[in-house]
Amino acid sequence: MLAYCNTTDTPALFVAPRGGKTVVSCQWIAQKDFARVLVVAPYPAFYGWMENLRKINRKLIVLSGSGVQKSFQLYQSMTSSPRRVVLVNVEAHRILPELSEYQWDCVILDESTRIKTATAAVSKYFVKHFDRVPYKMVLTGTPDAEGELDIFQQLRFLDRGILDCDNYYQFQHRYCIKPFMSFRWEMTQRGRAFLAERLARHCFTLESTQMRITGELETTVATCVLDNSSRAVYDEIERLLVVKVDDEVLARTLYSLVAFQWMRQLAGGILPQKPNTAKLDLLRSLLTRRDGKFVVFCNYIDEILLVQKLLVEMGFQSRVIRGAVGIAERMSIQAQFVGGMLDAVVCQTSAIQWGADLAKANTAYVYSCPLSRESYIQMQSRILNTEKKAISHLVLLAVENTVDIDIIKSQERKERNHARLTSLVAEIRRRVNCGNIDN
Image 1 (tube, rainbow, N blue to C red):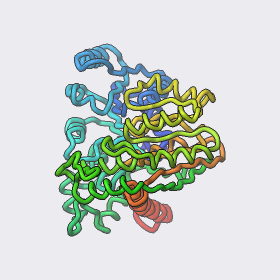
Image 2 (image 1 turned 180 degrees about the vertical axis):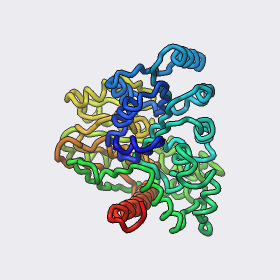
Image 3 (image 1 turned 45 degrees about the vertical axis):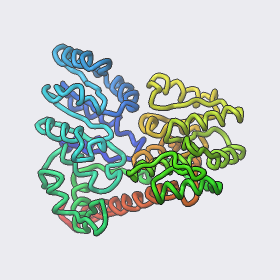
Image 4 (image 1 turned 180 degrees about the horizontal axis):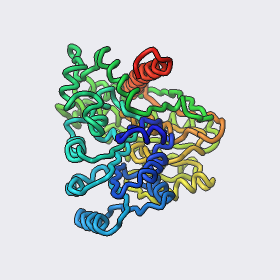
């Protein structure tokens, strides 16, 4: 991986989670001896960056505090330290637009799928204002999180020449079609072949199946059914976009996305107008047959509170990791879990995506499956034991004939699309190595 980075000024490390991307990036910084490095990473990944940069004896500036304080810290670091790495959150551009005004030798985007949407402000900012930086790097384990088109902006940030298109819409017009009655653009066969060829030529890709991981992950789906009254409420939401309980309309909406959230909440038992215990009872029955430590992943805060209350009632020692929990406390909870002081950890999926190791858990119960493939893959990697041959179990909880099943099927579809692209990349590399096509 490091050898590849030394062959280009704009490396792209599309490596599966826990594949050592951060370690290699720090080694690359040390080898190149950059003077001014900007690392843009999600907040939960800060701890990993801080640990690895400390190993290469680089002065690290982590911007913290209010916008004015961060601006002053940035100015001080850029005018005093001869060699420094500035670590900022991906949302820093909103309060620190002057980031782009400094002369950076290298800019690294960790979890670069944050810029995958061409119309997003964060994507426009980094693509436009860091175009002239001599060295750039992107890191992610899920470059095509929701589809192949997600890759364009990440490679455009590195170098517009990689995909031979100046902007996203030119690439979309050239290599994509929009099927009849569809809201999403899809890549043509010709476009997918072109993208695979460029990925094989310009990027370093490594799937979890190619890594020397001895552990295995077994995924199963556990289902339950709603009671008749809850099913009637669910059907009314799906059909008429109203919450109707006992012939009384308690809430209504014109927006299908709002109704979708209501259906998810009803399936999870947390819809205020119609609580139910179907999925919670399913979790209770599964926990009575559990083996060893476990983790429960939830989407909503109300779900976390519901599950945590259940674990306390059942006598488990457990802690909660959610967005409001700081890095230091998260590390403390993980240490307690690894040290055997906790039986379980209840996690908000979006808060535990990066930089966490929960591999001591034998089983993970997914109370509500995430919509994003990136969140789903990161969730899987948190419990995968990479050090010894062991089977970790991922149990997806779902209510039959609800959006729970649709979300699980969506994840399966995204995985098939990803496998199709990676197989094309692997085939192109095999042919190059055999000398059947020009390198």
